[in-house]
Length: 393
Image 1: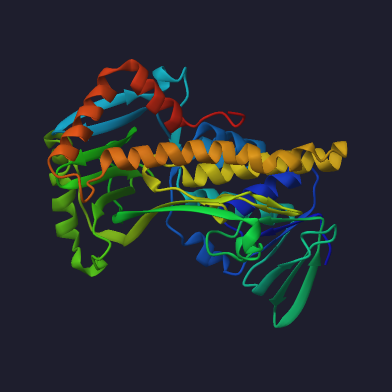
Image 2: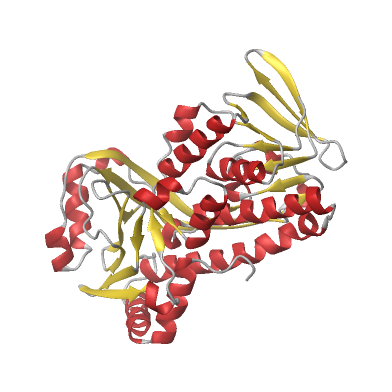
């Protein structure tokens, strides 16, 4: 097999990169170790920055989000049993975020790829990347019981935190940064109307953090901070709903519609960055290069900005015979990554109960939240980061 760009991983970042490259006339093949149903079954983020929606439109897959995505003009903060709205739209000159689940994003990209006749190899075994330090990289894998070799010009590692691409880089060529948080998020998905259909609610309480989000007008996603040692089965639906209500202001808690959970899980929180994001003709993108705690809603959006930058760089290489874009990809992407890492760390530090948050720490958090909602400058900084910083900045 031969292609121009071999993409490892058929999650949203790999599929979006494939769609952007296809629109630019650049041949690509995606290699994925899981089945399509497994990929679609992942329950992940659902808040899209404007830059992510723009990338989907650019890739020709914006119809679904344009039709079914729910625009959020506000972000709401709850603390000391009071509710405060941050007007994202006004503070950023008209920018918004859109609620549209990762499953829907992935499905749209899968369907568009199938319709365009591009090649995706699912359930590939023993995937490995080779010779990316030279001019003739290869991807080797097994499919249908046979060994395969994919020759290419470039390899895009969109295969997640545990993927083969970053693991294949020599240890002395990569620098990894990590921060692990001492708690997790217990998440519940339910077929209930969202408590706030046009805003995301972030809550800071003496019992811990809570988040009220949505996937549609009939499906909601809720989270509460919990101990990493908690087993999921210790959290009955009744216990979850009671705990969530206790962390919200009374009016919001009263509006909350409860129901049976259709998915429940506990996710650890961590920050992670690998530098650089380019190694010869191998590029890292998305979770293969960085992880953010979900507090700032940046994971999927960072992946989308990575592949948008990478597609532009590869477009310059093939159409203009220029290597400036690929040479600058890592520095450009990491500039935005670190700003999103900072924002996600700040949001996490501001809203969660840490082991040392007792007393003094809790009062400091509340004082900062009060300043945040009363200061237009502070509110604007939050809004600008939440809707997404420019790709160039």
